[in-house]
Image (cartoon, rainbow, N blue to C red; front, top):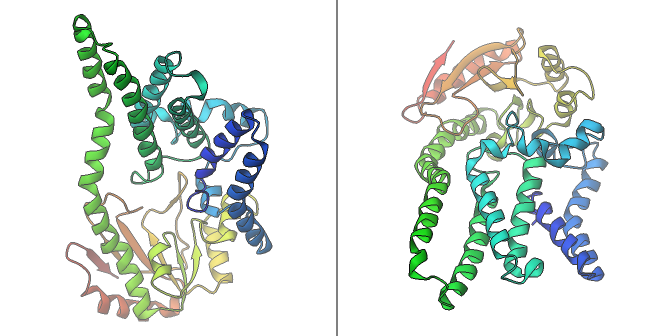
Length: 361
């Protein structure tokens, strides 16, 4: 699990804790070592190359605890319950509903179904614990991605525990006719509570085709443009996936996910992240071309690109549901290359997909 996504460590840690409660020392130790192995291997390689022991994406996007009084208090639920935080369960009603349902089911089942060590009870606890840790240390949103595994996990364990609970009661004829109105009310309540999940499912089904089209119209076209005209160039960008996958460029990532220099500065370790820093590091990296979202922001801070950069053109997609910005701007970081960039954009723009508008200076 941690080899796929580091969030898997939340569930692994809870399972190891349960194994320790059972005094299964060897299994707990073996499981812990195996789960930690990919993290440790990455950490050794990364720190040997003067980077963080965790991936930059986790360092920048996550909620790493600060080891002071306020930071320690936040570890006990402040992030998960703070309505002003982007990882708050209050801003994710689908997770809130699942967590409340799991907690209620756990309480209802406790005496009647084997207490703490019943397998369905443990599954419910694992879901609740994993959700809590994710909200404390991870993130939500980003086109349904980050909490998707929690939704599947929650629906699975709740369905299993519910079937076990009510299936047993049905077998024992524990549903007298006189209580049917009560159970009808429970079913109606469950239906109403499931609306956030239904809404999320419908939105994801409707928006996914459009999201795929957004990525093709913007990110894939950026990569195709670079592959055709600048396959090995030094490029500065702030959305680096497709352009690096499709080319062999040397990329300076303004977000810091792929560039340790910008990540350290963004986190305040090596100076102040501003327009001057962008200009200085771009010059040091011998950047020739920039492809940056219009109205680029880092965190909540808008940043202008250096005045020495020559804006040559821009592409705009419409009905955007997934990309970080509707418009990407092309800059000649080396002003002597502006005319060449202009010619290349004119030539490539004729092949842009329908619906993409462009302007060339």
